[in-house]
Length: 252
View 1 (cartoon, rainbow, N blue to C red):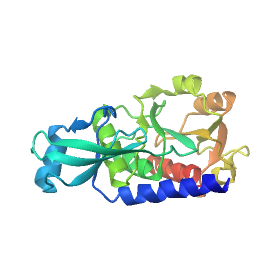
View 2: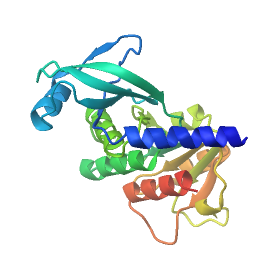
View 3: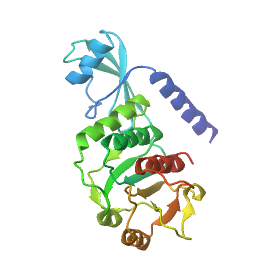
């Protein structure tokens, strides 16, 4: 037991030291290859913005828990090439938290939610289309790039999974988490404070649109064993509610 704890501390300290190097994202790293060719945007940032040269070290992550310490062997600003020196596997957080949240009309506010949820440590984000969700075009690639930037900024190696938008009724059918919550604004004696719940290893919470869920949606969720919860005493915007829920579940 003591040996296991000491080993975990050693890995975390080693990880902290390593993470002081510049960190970049490359999803398709093949650990069996000695050299890695970086794409043009990443190469330009390394060579032109950071002015790094051959012989200097940087780090790469594939967003799946792998951290690679590398050395620049060709500082070409369009095709920078690095050599893998070391690979470290970063353990995935024990609690897998999924936030299913209605997109909001203001994309900037929703993008803010994505950024902060990633920094907090949410494992998956599911945009859910409810009856009162305002129609909009969901730009998955842009939204996912925000997750990548937030992951790198917060020095993490696990990229949250971003799903394509799903209908509320389909989400209820597809959800297999061991613990399921729905945060709604209707008056109800059944609602409990989310902070009073002990999170399981896998939890999902649904956050509704600005007009809240319909009564029919709430009834359907309860029928599917979702627990009705409150996030506090004040009425929150959708994106704020998402962050409060993420915080209460991830940092419990």
